[in-house]
Length: 619
Image (cartoon, rainbow, N blue to C red):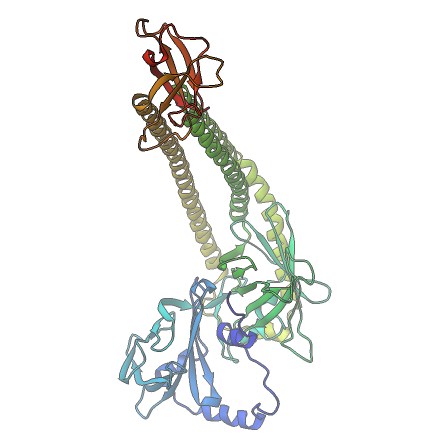
């Protein structure tokens, strides 16, 4: 069971968010201002344009270049998510040297007794070169649109695999973009500064869709930020409500409710909104204060034209955590239709998996019973019954697969009706999105309108429309390719399942045949080895009995056997004597275990001939 991390440590690792320090240790405003003034005088050369930059990828990894006036240095922070299972982060302190574009770099807390450090410079392509010292195979490159890093620690248990990154940008409503920057004077920070919820305020009233789920960003009457979840048809709704920070404590975010969790059933251990608007919520359950209640982490990232939600969950009974990485895009007709189709397919596949599991359980039980019957009967009819049962179950499986395929084809045939419903629903959502954007634009301060933030990719309306058309066609092509790939994967999976069913049926048949044959061989060997004779045993009313011995026949397949015999005089023909059997025959060779004859023999019992006619199992 993993130990729960301290909230402050996780905050520093994931978000770089500020923490409240005790008044006695906080820097005075005068010393901070002096440090900032001194920092402004530093000539950073190659690194100057990268101050405040943030680079990311779709796996949740990132690289930050931040000013640290208190240290008189730049802090480059590298973070690798590892699907949020075992995340790692390091912090590099960079200071200029007397040589232009040459720096001293230190990796904080990289060694057991000291920090790794070296003198470095960056070549024309932005790749870091080590002039002297050691940085433990740290690889780093910076460019305006991309970055790359990898690292292997010397005394730590983690290493960072190569991480290609891109410059993080925020997409404005008109399609233009601005870089996501940590620089307080950047256009991004100016855009987010007006709201306690940062850039999330820009998405209020907008609805996004993932592969299956709808997500609407809204605010309630109390000014709380609300995430509303539902399926494409509006069913299974859920709300996640974040309370606005108070005026006395701007960082005092609160979670008032969560989807699928009753009030009071969770305990927030960390809730922060970082400078790049990553909303991070880490919480546990509250079922029992004396035991482990699980560990859960959600990270929400808003970039205007997309919302990414990364999650990690480990319940009290889970051996390892499960993770998720879902992307939500603005609602369009095509995306909503695809979500509705995905939802229908998901329902059919879940039902298929449930029924298939039940059928496999029934098949295994039937195969086991048939095998048992074949072994116990010791007859060819037992094997025949098992084979017939196996064939019947295989036919039922084929019928089930046929019905399932018919349901999936019906989903495909209902595409036009679903597309019409999705188009009408998407039109309503897009109209609501547009109205929310107009309302937000109308309520924006005039000063903001007179000096809008600079954009790196501001496009004219015509160019924006053309780009949207190209994007729409690319999206349609991508959806069509995904649908074809999904259909091919489904068909391959069905074929594989049918082949697996046939393979298991054949293996079961062969196993039944082998066991039956082994039993028949053993019984035949017993028949050849057993020796019987007639005897006059006491307390039998003067009637003769049959006794005998049972040699050790190996391998011993049948433990309990019944010996069938014929007793006659030497002058009688075979088949004309008296028949009988000894149940649960052990071959003790005395009168404690006998087969009784119905009448006296015409000859002396010592001269009688007793032949074993058959040996079967006791059943």
